[in-house]
Image (tube, rainbow, N blue to C red; front, top):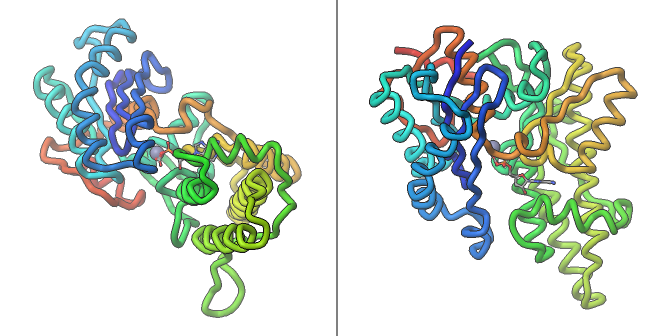
Length: 347
Ligand code: KG4
Ligand code: ZN
């Protein structure tokens, strides 16, 4: 039963948590959204600097709120891939330093494995196998979770991630950054059937379409063309209708692929994770389709959908319980496949 202090700095959240297996003792998240908003997206150099400035205080707060002493912590973990390398380096270096100073095992954690583990924080009794639908600003994947560290990616986006599409379309509609929550909000007063948009199917060389892979860049371009046409014709934009139609298209595309994948592989539970899992229409579509097919769909609470360190700590606890630790020579990787997770624990 390991207790781990975990650090997450892969993008624009400085997060530190103390977790005992699937129980969160503390979870500190310092968001940089306000700093990056003026640039319309995350500026990597600014993100690294912000992580540096916030790190020490976040660590102290996480320990204080967990009401634990360093002697009660069994390991120190940090996200080491994938993500912005400068940002990852800040968290990884802090974790290695704490591990050396307090003489604890050190673990690097794959960010997407963290998102998968977020589901365990609200469903501690969940056991693999299950299907994870990971939809964030950087990733859109359908992952067959077989056991701790053993994952098979069955479907993914061929271009933009779902969250990235939300952010880009929100920028087009001048809704600000991050785009997902803004589109979700304004779409409530819009008509999702107002415009027909392309779903983004991936053709297979032998004919037909890939059943699980997605594409969102064509959809984004279709919204751009539509916006240009509407502006030319009427001079004003039906923003709520555009947002609702776009959101509905993304939600339908993701739902169709997740349900088909679960049914084809005989997996009865779909666990959704990543920032886009907060989307209200995606939740509705998935719930409805899952109950039609007698499947179970699980959503972590909002605070564990977006980036946080509790999910990283939860993954690290299970690895530590299994005897996995990382060498102190472990580096950061901007990209790393989920199927390579176990390489992080090779000495
Ligand atoms: O998982 P996350 O916090 O960071 C990454 O690892 O990327 O996901 C952030 C993404 C952003 O693209 C944001 O626009 C999107 O999640 N997002 C949403 C919603 N809330 C956040 N997308 C759609 N609907 C939402 N309610
Ligand atoms: Zn993430």
